Amino acid sequence: MIESVGDWLVFLRRSDPLIGVPFLLGGTALMVFGWRMWRLCVVLSFGLIGVAAAPVLFNPSDDRWFYALVGGALLALVSYWLAKYAVSILGGLIGAGIIAYLLADMKVTGAPLWLTLAIVFIIASAVSFLNRRHVVIGVTAVLGAVLGISGLTAFLMASPNLYGTFSSLAGTSAIVLPFILLVPAVMSYFYQVAEVHRFHAEL
Image (cartoon, rainbow, N blue to C red; front, side):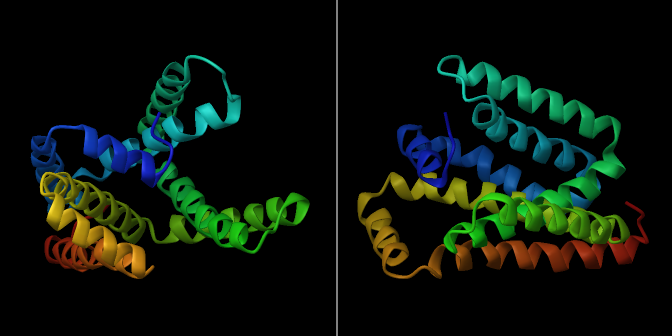
């Protein structure tokens, strides 16, 4: 079961390097045309959240894939039916997830943690509801960047020397990986914003 960045890297290492081709194509499509496929991207995002959350919430000893797939499918279906509202909830979950990650480093637990996350979720959901267009574009840009970088990583792993150099750079500086992910995501975000304004599109 893929539950972390490390698990994802192991999956890419064990896969055929050619798996990078659909990842690169899919990532490029999302980064360029994501705003046109915003409903699909929202459904995909909630599906991934369900896949990751179901095994953690139910903590099954067996059939982890079953729980993950059922959780992902249920969240994906609900988000498809309520796509516009799902964008707001997705923004709230992203905001709460970022804060949860930061608070985990500060060793905050218990009631203060959950109270803070609840407040952040409500505020982030409200802001996302008012700025649905930018949230959708941001989500598609990040998803596209993750897929694209995953595709490049799959190709890099086929060359031990190149992958070793990349791993050493990432290991010596905590800025390398976020920077590699943020550059295409930010470029995609501004490109999609320009495209939406050019076509006067409503999301």
